[in-house]
Image 1 (cartoon, rainbow, N blue to C red):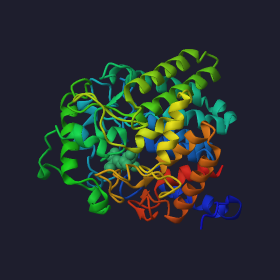
Image 2: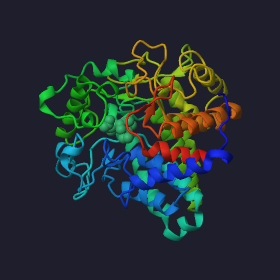
Image 3: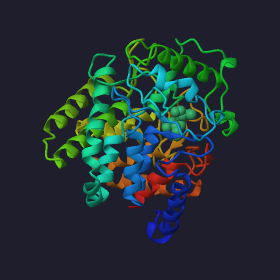
Length: 438
Ligand code: 2M8
């Protein structure tokens, strides 16, 4: 009760169990988030997984990122799923025959043989590549890891900054809720309400074979996800025509953190990183100008099509704490908000929930509408530490390690009770726990 987690006493076994999860989910060239629910390679999962894997095997961590980057499109986009051809089509929806990347994505430079989705996920990759390099610089140099990944990561950021600046204010937009990664966040409800759902009988959800319906997005949500993805595909995955476009704080904060990481990578390769650092600073100014809400004391999403900020408090709005150059008063306000009544950290909750505890749409079990997730808590921990909030970072670290172990490395947990939800033996939960043990 209130005990501080002591890795010296129990860390040995937590470490071993986390390593076993990652071993079990390894396919030989990458790691699945979970064999049953998500049997392919996911983009931002792989970045988080690499961050943990580097403590077990820097070689596997490098391979994880290289496999993902091998599926990059000619226009620079990194697809959100790289499909494993040996997994049956029925195992996951939407499957390769829905996305049809190699044909529908031809103009955008989709790979000819590897099948992928056509949307993206948050850009955690350059940050992951830099952390992986640092874990074993000798191996990294011997394999030429950074010289190989740097041009690809640079092209990825170019895609986001040029093709995805749909709001014209310098930030990247997501064109599908799956791109931001918090699939059914209440922040999407208003912008999604304009999208006519695809008829329920026009597709078959595979997620309900493995996940509890009450813990997953609704059929109406899925109808809209399918409509948006179908329209994007039928337009050849060209950008600028979407009915849904949102500037999200976490997506852009990760882009900024990754742009700073690319500056470090450039410097390591003997170039100068100053232009990249300057760009990251400009992006930070744009993030504050476009998404900071001083009255709410947090960042909000901007609905690019409908106009204006979306008045929903999601955990995404706290994650810019990851950004090194954030103004001090904003840092202080974010720390207050995380520990205040809407997120309850250190008071009613030990892990930050995905959505406002007092919000009308709050549901402690339904996916991204309330449960606590380990990647968001890892990002918040990192942000608190970065800005010198060491006591709070330590408390969050203990809570994350304890809950990860006690929940069987669950995909997400009830933010009040820690009760496990979704898949167990979930890869990024194990990977990020491993990272915090080091
Ligand atoms: C969830 O999203 C996928 C679609 O991409 C799904 O629900 O089928 C999200 O939690 C996402 O953030 C995550 O990357 C993915 C795989 O873990 O699952």
